[in-house]
Image 1 (tube, rainbow, N blue to C red):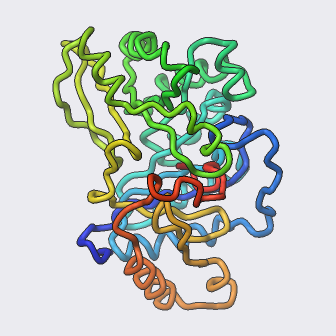
Image 2: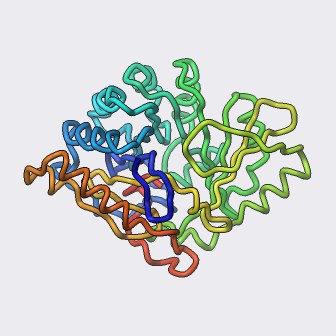
Image 3: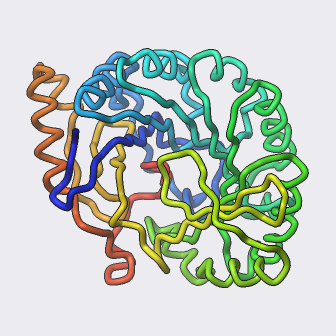
Length: 324
């Protein structure tokens, strides 16, 4: 198994298949951003399959396809099919804004994707457009299509921002109860210029938890997945809500993941800049054994924790570069 210097087993790879997105959420991909990677520098489906295979040999079991918005990559179905066929990969999931999900849910399910995380920060059409620069209706339609295709569980991710959408917490809970979805609240992170500009809207999720406890009973619950959320069941409903608190209560001691950019840079921590460039190695003819040794050497440098609090402006890449 892949283990870092702090005894954490690395079983989870978050794989960005594009740094581009059809949304412009201000905290993730500012509308002024134009510095995208050149497609010729992207990992090809063959290269992705080869790298995932090496991670699987080293013990990685779960791969999540991220972006940017992964559904804007034309080869996504092929990439998903290849990864789901890699021996040792037990779970393939996808993070998406769901704007194109109505078109792709069925084919993604057939390609091996089983679980979805969907970004949804507002149920108000005007507010949604202000946050994302796009339309709400296709997202809601995509969620319904995904449900009919049997993708499960479907988790909605709501980045809670003071003065922007914190007044919608209860309405999002009601929506998820009605539509039988899992809901996760996420704190803003100071990653890139967008994340730094959103810091003024930072809201510790302890405030949301306290608010919900005044209205509902929250019982600790378990939820399948590889992520860091703390989960609670709402009343006697089927709704499970999660709290992801990278700033107020960091969860670095249980981190089991690494992230790979669309250009093949292996990032060891979302809150640090240290990385390993795997694409040049492959294109220079490195053997599978050499690639695995390089990955193991990189994991040996994985830091104990992020330092958002000590160095909140240190990460200059946009959140879209690694998918969060």
